[in-house]
Length: 411
Image 1: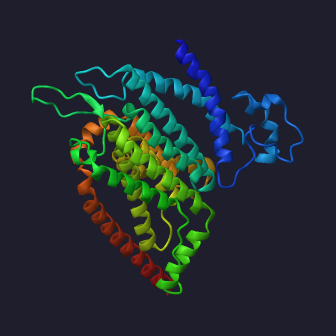
Image 2 (image 1 turned 180 degrees about the vertical axis):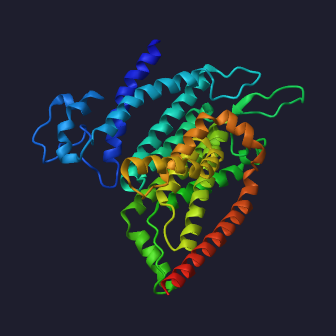
Image 3 (image 1 turned 90 degrees about the vertical axis):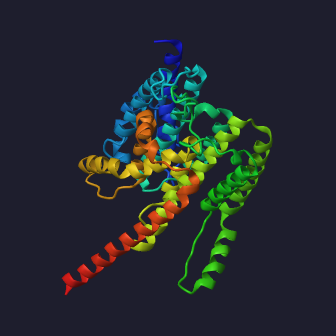
């Protein structure tokens, strides 16, 4: 084991407690369970050894009277798993396991940058997953900084993206490994290097900022009153000013980046923005249609921001794949969680994270199979609208049949 791997084990011993701290602190209803939070008033004192990674949780088993039976087990397992997962992720990344094999060897720096992207996104998804299990919500305190981190990383380390095999120049040659972009599997659209690309980027950034705002549409007193109430709530919400400032800073930064960064960095940044826009749009659209057809919330808005964050790291393709694979992972997780907790209320965020993790780790094989089915983004909007209309009609019919069947049984 080399010095780098030993350093990663120590980094994992620090990262594990941070993950636990974030799970209990970033939630909408924080709980003072992590030893790095303020001491709860019901606990008179706690020894310094409670802050030790991994072992500290074993010393705190006596606090079960305050936090519930075996409260320490989950954070203990998280801190055990984190350094081990970090080490294995590094080893697999450095061997090029997550890279397609091309004619030209992938630079070592590219493998290192991809490891950084994987480690960051998996950390964020872990925090989001366990908060969603606890509260059935994913807080903006995780997804907003995560999305911005993905955007910044796409400029600073443009090769940290997932890689695909480029189209060969001659039929007799194999393609080379290249980062995925917004138009993959087709070649990059040259129009996006100009003002068209900047317009798309600013549009997706603006939609993301607007999506974070406190938006409420209450039409009980008519549509005109709903419009007045919508803007009144938006104006009075404390988050509006913060989001407006964030939008202005992002608008300026994107405009400057368009003028000063190199072609590969702009391609990476715009692909990240496409991931935010098309990724968030997919989940948001299904959420709106399902709510309309079923008369109840099917997906939380935290799921929308979660997938936008994932798209900021690796583009819209992995978001679309992960979203449609999530129900299959959901079936496995539902059974496992029900056996452990007997809880039949299941959040969707953990399934999205599990499907995304699978897409990341098996990207080479998955892309080789599904790349023939992907279309360029300009064809996605009409297809997406068609899917939404079909889904809405199916859910509406199912809901109507359930209501009629319920009435018939009650009679």
